[in-house]
Image (cartoon, rainbow over all chains, first blue to last red; front, top):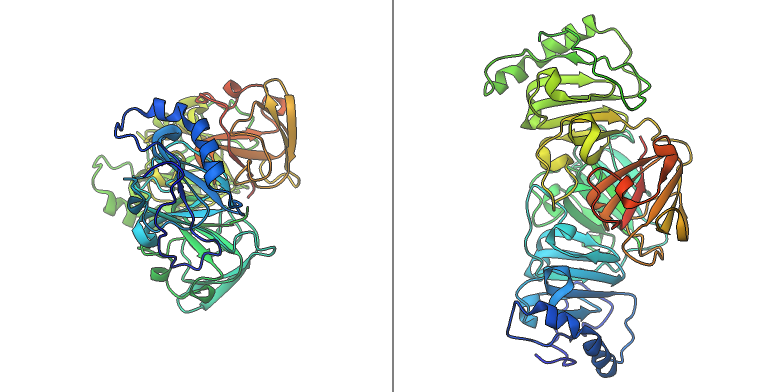
Amino acid sequence: MRPGVPAPRPPDTRGCIYTPTHTVSADGSAEPYDTRLTSLGTAEIDDNMALTNPMPMGPWKITVYDQEHFQGRRMEFTACCQNIMECGMENIRSLKVECGAWVGYEHSSFCGQQFVLEKGDYPRFEAYSGSNSYRIERMISFRPICCASHKESRMTIFEMENMMGRQFELCDDYPSLQAMGWMNNEVGSMHIQSGAFVCYQFPGYRGHQYIMECDCHGGEFKCYREFGSHAQTPQIQSIRRIQH
Amino acid sequence: MRPGVPAPRPPDTRGCIYTPTHTVSADGSAEPYDTRLTSLGTAEIDDNMALTNPMPMGPWKITVYDQEHFQGRRMEFTACCQNIMECGMENIRSLKVECGAWVGYEHSSFCGQQFVLEKGDYPRFEAYSGSNSYRIERMISFRPICCASHKESRMTIFEMENMMGRQFELCDDYPSLQAMGWMNNEVGSMHIQSGAFVCYQFPGYRGHQYIMECDCHGGEFKCYREFGSHAQTPQIQSIRRIQH
């Protein structure tokens, strides 16, 4: 693909608001190790892109690179990408979130391990994969979190499956559910009334992540298997809102 | 060491409020792999400990284990531990924070990588080491964070060293400093006016951690080398309060 040429539009399966117009902005060099040279050409490429992509960027923008430290082939997205390999990129090894909140996935079509991506620089895998226990070395699909920054994020966690047992309503960030009085290290089911949250396996926002949105599954997650395609236990020990 | 026998008191170099009375509660078995048997004896040991250690637990309590998943030799602490090896434990491979907020360190005497520990269960290394980029497999010292849960946590971050350049006052949790308007991915210096904060290398509370307290260095951290003994760059992209 050449600079400024829009790549094929990937199917939009998650109700993204913005049209997936992503623009290939790297020079498509066949030399994978010639990353410094590619990087030096970035300013030129940006100008070119600005000319050929006059669309407003909207509230979401992410730039991904196929080499660490923002080197190598580079692409910008303002909406979902179901499979980065279909855009001619083998993998994502660094990225910059420039606007909005996103969720990245280990596999294509929004499957596998998931991890929240907020505004900032992620120079290598380790910066965005959330869990030490399962070392993700792939990010193949990603999408905006459309209901993040709902002015009032609110969810209820339940002790047992199917919204049964003791419950607690959350509308803040909780680095330790047990410190706020939750009885153990598990959550049986949950209901997201508004906004978006990220739930973590361990205290202090560590371990496997589950991104939970009010506009997904009607906001209802009746058992841990619905938390995510990679969920293996109901262990959840910290939860926070996703805002941007 | 035998159940209920207080171990030697380690030097207290960080101004902990509580006396370091830690109690060896494991059976000191010479068989390192006989962990299930050791675990089955825990209830009995707990009763014994309650009888021989009538001190109130106070606002901090942590239980550490020398095997993963809360198995093996077990010790409880209500104050600092400068070197777990001096207590006869080779390393810490799982832990439970039962009360208060703590900071763990890679090396003895509160040196090396640091990571915040809040109430909850940490069944293995990966649950408490914060950074994927530098895989910590040791936790040798730890201490309570005495000024956590100050009723009003407040700090100021500065663009440049020695409290110079643009500044921003923080009194909340910020998963992305850039999303709140901070100009880049670095913080030059900082001043903690009250409470305690944890600063992270990457957005979303990932990467290297720096625990910052108002009662340490007078709350002033004039350049990134003062952020921690392991700090190698001024890169900081998310910050949150430590509460319990």
